[in-house]
Image (cartoon, rainbow, N blue to C red):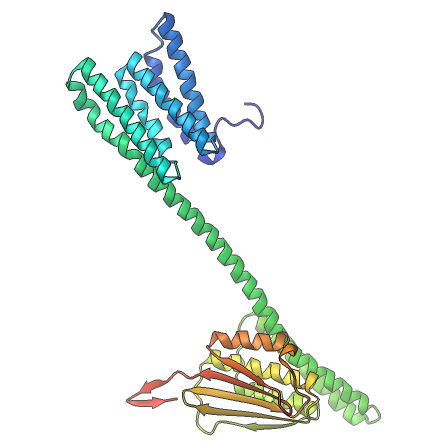
Length: 373
């Protein structure tokens, strides 16, 4: 075989080659003939093979129609001039008719094919008697119905292919979302810790003439850096869960290092939040504290947690320079996206400082007839 030459496209596998075995049927009725009938038979057989190959390679509806019509015409020639049993070659045509994607063209092809089969069967019965009808009738029905089965199979295969493509796209989107999540977690977690290290480094510069204070500040930096390494490991292992209490403690630490007075007004009643809700609120508190230290120029920050109807509200207020809607960066955008996962909302007020109000719904649980928040 010439390198690069393909009799049939590779995607069809060995099936087209296997069906070529049925060419033995018309060939059997030709090999013993002489004269013009033999020439006619071999020419028809060659045209049949060409049509059969081209139907596998055809790439347009017009080509499909031409080669399919040629194939049916050759089958009629074999049936009328050589043997009525060559009508069984119609199974080749019924297979290709099922490939028509356009429903209108498909119905036209089935109608034309059925008309040809019926006409050939009538001619066979006329020439050989009614006994032939009993033999050909079952095959006739199967050949007419086969295109519908093939079409159904092709549609199913197409749907499976579309499903596989959709699954691949979903996998790609999941990977992309995971990258965004990791980037957001790194920003929220390490941004907070690195800001703290920066502040502690500035403290060392201010107390450079006091060795005891320098040593203490250096110990704090070491402690913070070890905490950062631990956070990275937890993020990589996807096991990082941050509670509100932990983040309040971290928030007080970083604000105190920046000489910002911190006040926390906790909820008096027990707050029942899921681990996911606590984690997302904790990350929002972390991002808020980082923004206050970097941008607010505030001297005071107050965090208040309260219940309002069936929601939990967390308010983070500072007395800094405030901000406008156009100043929203990745941090606030990430907070909105995270809160959306738990149907939460973020509102920003910039009047005499900045106030962030986080509101999330609380799932009401019923325990022995009592409603508990």
